[in-house]
Length: 270
Ligand SMILES: [Zn+2]
Ligand SMILES: [Zn+2]
Image (cartoon, rainbow, N blue to C red; front, side, top):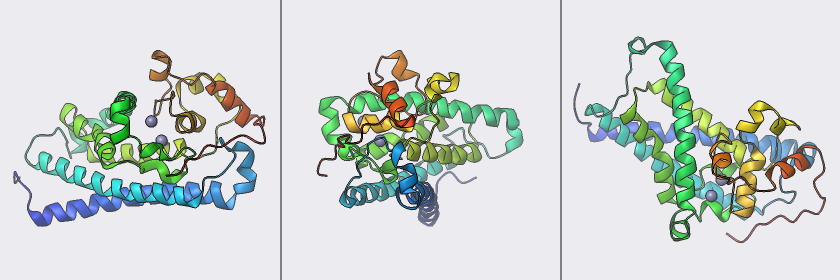
């Protein structure tokens, strides 16, 4: 195995990663946007977390920054590939090396690790002196659409991508695990920015719902810019006491059709 990659190899790896990132972004955000924001708009209106809609210019900003993020994620992908070629990572390609049980375990471990990584890097990015340079772009969306899923400043995009390079040095990971993880992450990310709450009423009273985040949870983070920092699970926010005080109340209002009709949607100029 060669220890370094050629420029041609790097370009094709870059193109492949870029395409994979662009397609999963376009597909998840596009399908969600089409179903909820266009095709079934009226049917889902009562489930909107913020009843008003943002102006189109905000959606354009979300897409613009998301495309920039795709370019950055692809560059990180090339970096990981080069590190792997040089023998620095623990990525393995022979499934039989660790078996299917490990494959499943490594996928779950990656999700739990990412949830922790996300919560703490997110808290870090909310420090006032960091926020204005790194995280402000993501918060230009006070009333996000699915297109906001990758709407990051380039510095934030690098931080967000960081979980993968970190984990490939720590534990053996198969490319299949990494691919599935990225698809799962995309789906959950689009769900958080959906603008609608698809989970059933009473979800937060179930055992699973107590530990898992909802679309309302992340939408409120965008609306109030304070509280609700978690990604997949509602564990770190519970442990650190950072759930928004009105989270459960708001979720129940949205899912039980008790939203005030003239709720003030906040969407400042981008
Ligand atoms: Zn934030
Ligand atoms: Zn967000």
